[in-house]
Picture 1 (cartoon, one colour):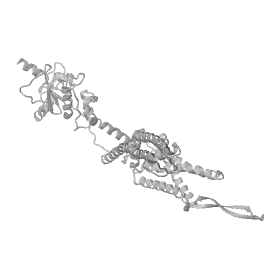
Picture 2 (cartoon, one colour; picture 1 turned 90 degrees about the vertical axis):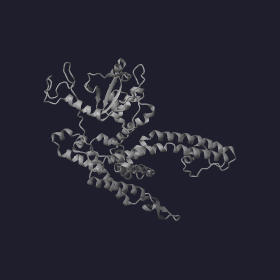
Picture 3 (cartoon, helix red, strand yellow; picture 1 turned 60 degrees about the vertical axis):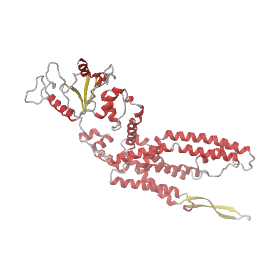
Length: 507
């Protein structure tokens, strides 16, 4: 009888979310400095009627928590989300880094997901129209908005920014976006077509020469061709729009510093500035002999294609994929350079071993070009090995190039799939969630000398007991717990009749 009484005194019943668990106090003492290791009957969540401790927490996670006390191994339940598991561990006072290696990869997936969502937030892929409160906070006049003293410029500035920088905010913004894309395409097409021979006008000079009879004659000399004058007017119209657009976006931008340091905006105003610099050079430097070289700098106008990222979320995701795959791309370039140098040296000496009058590899730098073309599987055929040893080196070079390029590609594809799938999921989820108020009813602590588990009456501020007519908070909690206890009983409660126990009281 004494052994049975000691065994019942060492037992403790834990009611977590309506599921009752029964274990020994010695089991909970295995991990000190945790919530369960400091259980006493003086706690507010102890029910003396049912002789149990009640915790309104997730019962599924607690099963793994209690198993951690019993076995010393913390496993991750696959039917809950990672942040929920971390929150529960924090409540019970456990370290999340103690998760077993077999569950670590599954457990840490939510952290990668949170990092991905943070990146997508920075990309600003949402097409949902922000509220007036969010707009006021973004443009820095939140105080004026709360006081109801918003002036006309504070009303107009967000509207201008939405029109020119957020193409999906309204129908008018979509029209502005279409116009912007149209001028970008026209500018790029004009830049390309003006180099076509059929689109150029010959520049004819009238040169005065002397004949053999010492007479003066004139000769028409066609020295060069210039682009048709129509392309000049097209570029003037396009750049007038780009100049107007960038000025409006700069004036209405929420942050001038962020606008200036943005990479896409840098390309935009440098490309626009290059047009005006080109006009100045044509006016004052056209007589120079190397004036055609100055036109090379106008190639930066091609970079205007990156402005399309404001109108396409796919381009944003693609650029972010290359940023996230920077390590893999660096590793790819490193191995390519290593293979190019090795195989260029090998093919140079391989072609010199045998008699080869048609040797294309006169130096190792020429072999570098051949190795680059071969490893990237392009194969121009302008340089080919002629000896058998050189052909063998070429075969090894091609195989090494295929393997080197193929290894990092799945990582890049995986990153793109991850970002794209999260973007699609975010687009389908509602932007406005229902708010849940964090209200929790708790019993006041019991003071010494007061009867009943309910303690001080919730309706009065004095230490008097409630009247018989007033409902007691403690009795209400006890009634609810009795209903939960009768409704659901954990398997931990049903113990076999005959059990063997170790000296510390574990089953």
